[in-house]
Length: 401
Ligand code: AMP
Ligand code: MG
Image (cartoon, rainbow, N blue to C red; front, side):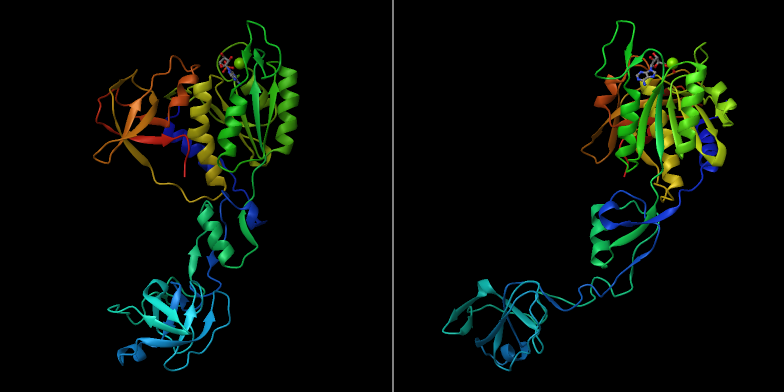
């Protein structure tokens, strides 16, 4: 049986990279950048005025002049004027500094009477103050964004400021989420006492969509060899990635591994030394399509999706890997040795600035309602079976950056 690290490596080694595509900037948020973005212009592109007020020549002020005839008004977006000696120009925030001017006096520090601006007694203006100098943020051609970045709203601002209408990002994979099980009934349909509501499919779709993998339709297949064979074959023909839940344990209705073999999906591994999620199955189909078959138990399905499927999609999207995150256990955890434990936790921050992980018990790996109160889970190494409060541990948040 593979360790969690071996399973992760085997998946990453088998994933085929999704190709880049040009996309309009308004569809680029949350997607993975595949190009370098360079500055179109200097930033600021001109000496930018940072205050409403008047602008004048500091040399005039140093000569003791305190009253300046108002030559003109220049607002943001107005063409640049040339200041005449001994005068001032009324200036607005965002305007380009007039020629010959090098000093701003804020509007609160002046009074204007009969076209003359008078500077408040005792106010000392400084040369260059309130002027955001051209190229002081960065010069034209500067390297602003690198490939591998997941695009945030701030990155969208940078891309727009570079004058781009399109950027190269990773193509969104076509993902199919497939719930297997005769007992499952989707929300909205009548249900019998012996049946179970289908909840893994919508939860896995939500986890994917949250990270920008929005092309992820869902299907429900029964535990029946013919139906599984036909259904999975159809999805395999259309999708880049399949994510199944259920049907990979040792029961008589767990047909998924058998069907995969018939469809030419080669098993990479079946079972990982972890709890929850031990029965997890992973294989590679024709055209290197990845097939994740997660255990049906809802806690196992969600942990395995977060632990294996999400990092695999990120890697195939050429995303820059995130550094590991750590937290300090806030309660003792004991479990059976020789399986890595994924322990759901709620996070709180301590007054000392530490991230504390409070273990949240789930009743069984079917008790997914307890997960609603958690922020993620911690990974407790299989070599040890007792982890006292205070131990630093790997943290995996449900939501990642
Ligand atoms: P399995 O892995 O198919 O043996 O399923 C294990 C348990 O998880 C069973 O009790 C199933 O009813 C439950 N289960 C499987 N798939 C789902 C699903 N899509 N939504 C909710 N529960 C499920
Ligand atoms: Mg089942």
